[in-house]
Length: 141
Image (cartoon, rainbow, N blue to C red; front, side):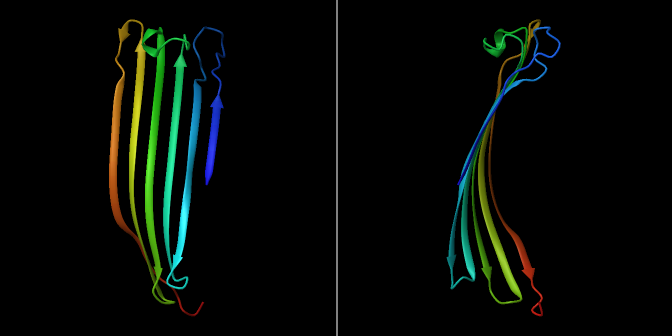
């Protein structure tokens, strides 16, 4: 199991009221579960991870991005799940099969006072299943 929280404070280097370093909050967490089977010759693994990041730069950080003179903002989230089956059939042959899925979403805003651009919301979902590796091992080692 793991967890992480990271916070970066905004910074205006030259004092002009606009950030050169944007505000950022990052949260990440996840866990892995293993189960050995077939007298230790096979292993089933599940992984679950979640990452969320919120960044905001420009001016007037206390206001919504569309009310600032200049703003760049992104709020993204990703939830991923994968499962892997590893099987050592013999001393010379093993294989691994992995299936994974992820759901990713983000809201991005770019705002300039003269040309108000609306927020854009994108959501991407993917599902993939693949045979990730088949390996032959040298029995003399």
